[in-house]
Image (cartoon, rainbow, N blue to C red):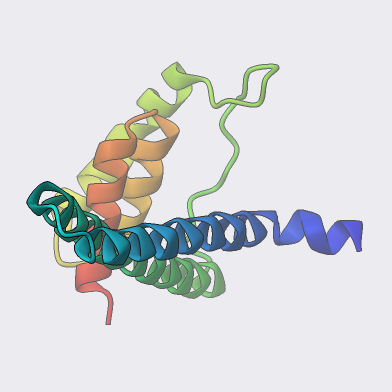
Length: 151
């Protein structure tokens, strides 16, 4: 049981956070409906705003869940092909990747994308390199580019 938990802890965390967000969206929606029923114009305006928040939240939640599922599918394809980047970078005692080591390896993945910009596999590996180097914003953008090219 403990091994199963360790293997799926990220998915369990995603489910937990998703349930909390859905609960928050439901409460926000319910409060918006209550405020719309109030006769005061200010309350009605707040109620309309409260109804808008769950719509944005649901859209963002669905978008991120689909992105995560597609990222997992791409990773499984790369793993089956033996194309995932090897996780052999040195780590600090806290378990974080040593940034200088990640920065040294980064040009290899950047050149791979420059040589074949229409290959989702190259973008996926570049995303992993950005993530190892600590640049989460560029890592997500590169992964979105990989997802766009993934068939």
